[in-house]
Length: 221
Image (cartoon, rainbow, N blue to C red):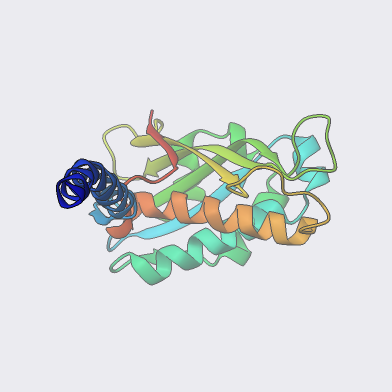
């Protein structure tokens, strides 16, 4: 009788163990799927074997509050493209930044004139519409956002005065809530935000490996 009871108890436990193992297996499988990486093709290939200039602008308030943001974004974007796009010839970003300062009205110039003035085949225009390190009204927490419309001017395109392609990129850093000044300083947050933003901008132009389920904000306009 005792043996029968023990056997019944054992049989009663077996389905429960199976459920537990199935649950663990599902969780592992889900985690593996979540962390998968895939090859992502370039959304625009027109920079290959072309001369290219990178320009960026934002509103006066943002430019004043973050004076190194635009030069850093222009320089890092140009450097990443130079390393990853086949045959590309980048206009020296130092020259681009100097030209932007000396030509403050350039954002209102006809697009065809930009390419002609800089004597390049393509111009990448980074039009920043948001750049911040803190949430609105809270200077103690970090919640960086860099958001821009990305336009590509083709000097030899069908309509050089219109963007051949447009994309919207919205980057955030850090990628978790609750990070404050006790955990990180403004320099670390801004450098992290710029790195994330430059990655997402330059990924538009060359094939690359990224997470299968990235938390990215890239849209074709």
